Length: 155
Image 1 (cartoon, rainbow, N blue to C red):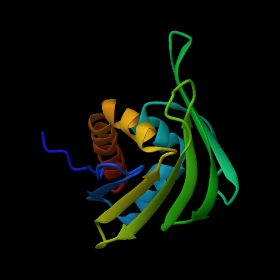
Image 2 (cartoon, helix red, strand yellow):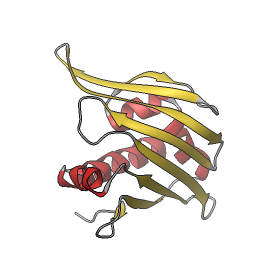
Image 3 (cartoon, rainbow, N blue to C red):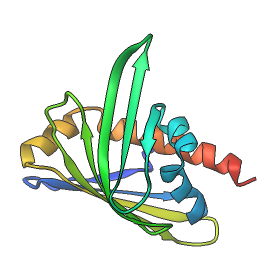
Image 4 (cartoon, rainbow, N blue to C red):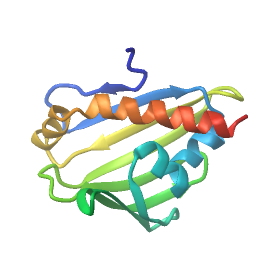
């Protein structure tokens, strides 16, 4: 299966860039990242908090039979509707640490849009730990599901 979400990780650097062109209008792509109900569907996690504004914050949690499997949180530093989100991201109980994310949303046509995510890690080692996980595979699966769910909203 072709991976539509591309990850560019240059050797020896502590950052990476993720890009994906979606067959979605810009406003739907942005909603998929900012509306709790949609985030829950494509990420497969519970949104405990999603305060989309400058200096807002968010919290996600996934549990199985009452046992918390994944917990993530962060601060939203800048929020410009249909354009960008600058935020921190931290997975609890993981050695990767806090990362800084710059999400940029761009209209290509009326029905297509582009997402560019620039992630900066604390160190090259932290980024390498992230890349050792099934990061690219999981991100592609999630983005494919995002596109599938948002496409249904567009009809």
